[in-house]
Image (cartoon, rainbow, N blue to C red; front, side, top):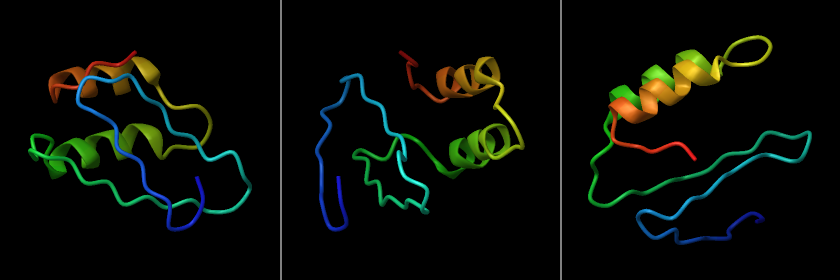
Length: 71
């Protein structure tokens, strides 16, 4: 995807996103109904935004607690 592109992911579809380039990537994500709240993003950021590799088991635990099913 490039700047200005959009994608629709139906509920329940397995999906993945990754920045394959050196530059900063930003995404605006809209979820309806809004079942995932700010706390999820705060918790997952603490696990993901670390030096080195993130603890994927901890990330999966957070996802499951917030109703997301990791693939």
